[in-house]
Length: 370
Image (cartoon, rainbow, N blue to C red; front, side, top):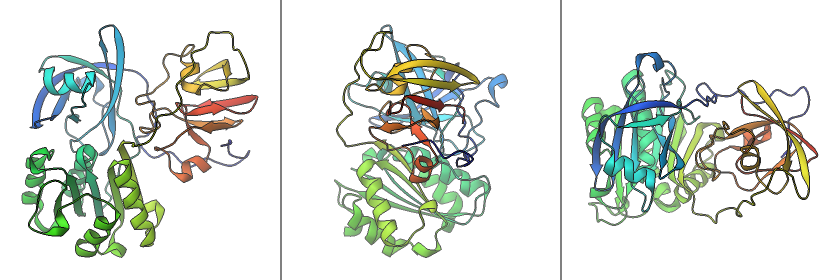
């Protein structure tokens, strides 16, 4: 991909999306079990950081902690409604140090470092109208925040199609039932279980393209929907997008967030010393108003190579999924190995994921502040 042509303004960055890199120690206020392998963790934000940690519904927090001398970072979506204390939903990942600590070991009073909220998967303030959410598994976390905020602060109508394996694996079952009780016909809740028989065949099975198509026929007048919110595994999200494209839904009404990408990982990063051996590019890295001029190899992603000189660069997953490391390529060209976070309009405007961006031209300028 290349930088936008001179004189071409990049797409405006949505409110709440600007990167802020400082981490702050926050106290764990509560850990609430949701089901056998998941919990909701509420964080206590001091008054002096209230503005920094004000979040839009659907945004996430990047958490940082040291385990056995090694720093780990994970991005977790906020499940609380806007205006409440930040609360993240966490599902246990087998062998995952961070998720195991949060779900099994964290206790009120413990401390974890957090960066201010980030992410572009959120509605505009006061966005009423008709909203349809399609989520699976832990993909419910940001969707719950979006649905609760819309229902409490606007006259919006919300339909949520939520897929899980079994009834005992449903995250936030009580919270969703409470939303239904509080908002009646404005909130339509459809549970779909893949490994448990429901009363209707339509509600039993995986949320694949055929089932999503059938569910929309049964519950949703597609042409009347203002915004679609898709969150879950890659396959489900892509199937839902394909269904909506076939139905003629404009792309700017469809918003997606991924929790898992079922794809081969990118090639392993080759560690390099300060002296670059092989083809290299002059890369200017802009973050927090400071520019670093670096000579970086062309076969290592910009983030990995530049971190040796700028350890403050923001990142979370390094898998091309979360979008935390997004940059604007202001000059030159990079090639992304994979991209599951940026939409076509962002790529066309010159944005890239620095964790996946390989320098192509002799001179490259990437701007984290854009």
